[in-house]
Image 1 (spheres, rainbow, N blue to C red):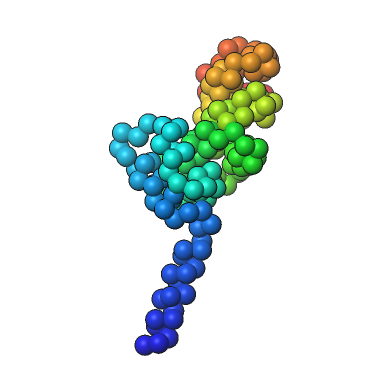
Image 2 (image 1 turned 45 degrees about the horizontal axis):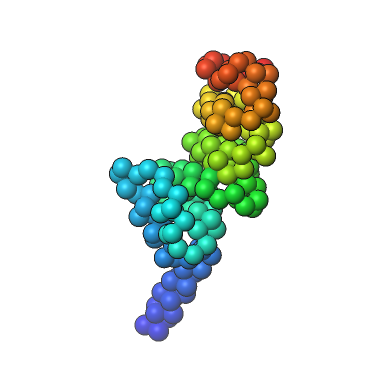
Length: 170
């Protein structure tokens, strides 16, 4: 019996330590993102608890969560402009093993988080083989709206960056 209790305690400690972020913050964010009529609310996300960006990054990589929760976590990172968030979003967008929907959200969040600083990186996705990635890149660059973002769009095919075409750009 003592072995069983020790084993259960060990599992509980391992599960709790698997998330470096605040468990209350995680629970608050999951509750927020699970809402059927969820709309991204910067104030509510930032008030979810301690270390929100760290918790969002953990949630984005947690494959045990539903994909739509992970996508909303990635999108919410767009409300934070610190450099480590930008690096995380770039790594997520570039990952070949991450679902394309999550990668697409990373492009959108990166443009919101880093603005014109992300233009060159995002412009690289205008020639991606995936239509969703091209479309996300074009929409993100339009939203940034800087001269360099507009130039990147024109360079590959007009105001939508060629994203409206269904075939990959050369």
